[in-house]
Length: 136
Image (cartoon, rainbow, N blue to C red; front, side, top):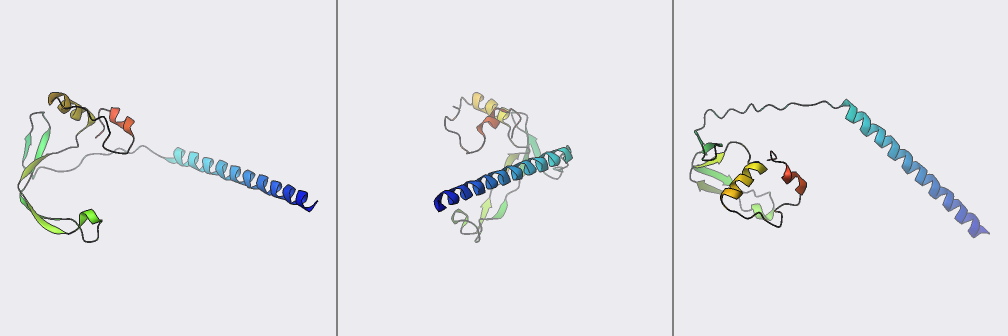
């Protein structure tokens, strides 16, 4: 008889916990919906000034910036195993694109260079985003 009462009590407690979790979920959903209603659209403007750098337009029409030669510190003593040792390295001057390469730009390069699209993705992220042409 005590076993039946204990099972009944445990069942009631289990139901109380389930109802409590459902209530928490509903409250959280209300909180998220309120936060979504309170959000506003943000416009980001590109106000970076590259006028002090030497620039050129590449064959593909993309603007490139000269990174001057010099010494820079590579690595970190406090970083991961692949960042050690910290050391000074000399680099020759080189040009780099002013803006990130988009998926569309990469595909233009890939077709022009007859470069095969990799069958295995190079990153673990959302692969569907690669179908967005203007995604950097």
